[in-house]
Image (cartoon, rainbow, N blue to C red):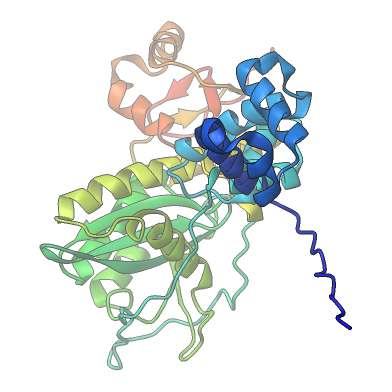
Length: 401
């Protein structure tokens, strides 16, 4: 007597991609095999196939969710493209929330997976760039892994990394303001000597002008470039206190290493090769601009660094900003001094010149160069309005205000 065992039926959840592929196969071979025989083999319910064919013929029959998925998928693709194709699920979700889209994180994850879109993943470096100089003087570690600052220009961190190109290694140095993780100076060079890290520092000093703003600490690793005599003398000349990490501590300069890792993952590793130093320099320039003004950073509340600094100045009252800028101007000989009032916003050069000339206090000595130096202060986002003096004590505040 024969016993025939019934083959168990295993129900598998088919992905939408597989279902669409099978339905496309049906479309191509339906005239030869017939719809129902193919649906039994695949397996797809004939009603599902006919419903899909109907929605393809008439898009108005599609569900509201499918229509919304198409709209949101286009927006997700736009955000992904605008941010150098490096944003993952969380950053895309945060950016869309900033733009006013009511979308859940799980929906972003589902749609990005359906589109085959994913962010970059940071990897490991294999070349040693920190070479200590045992003969050089080493400052103390004033940071002790506490990479936090209460205001801009309170703590800077510096480090450099390398990039392999067709013309040999290129070395890229960064100087980062810890308060908002803003890159305030950078330099690319073909050699890892003191000159190129010193150039990055000079760029940061020119852009930020941290004179008379309170104590500023510059923290780096114990590389010979950062503990060299020339670098240390330039820090002392600018009134910046030097700090270096401890020996054998993998976290001694963690924040700067984080910036290096993001730079390598989002710019360097996304291309198979770099032909020249100029290619790397142009790509770095574009990345730094996007990093400072558009990239969302989780540690500062998923906002760009420039916006974080602008919010810092907006939370200060006008007298506090006036006192800060007056103090800042004292440390820079020949700087324009703020006096009457400060209001938030951004003023133009012509209005500042007219105001200074109308009150007769600055005269012809206040030129475009000095006004530009005031505009380049790190409190970008503040508008300075009122009377100015070229040198001497800050003017008293107007009694009318």
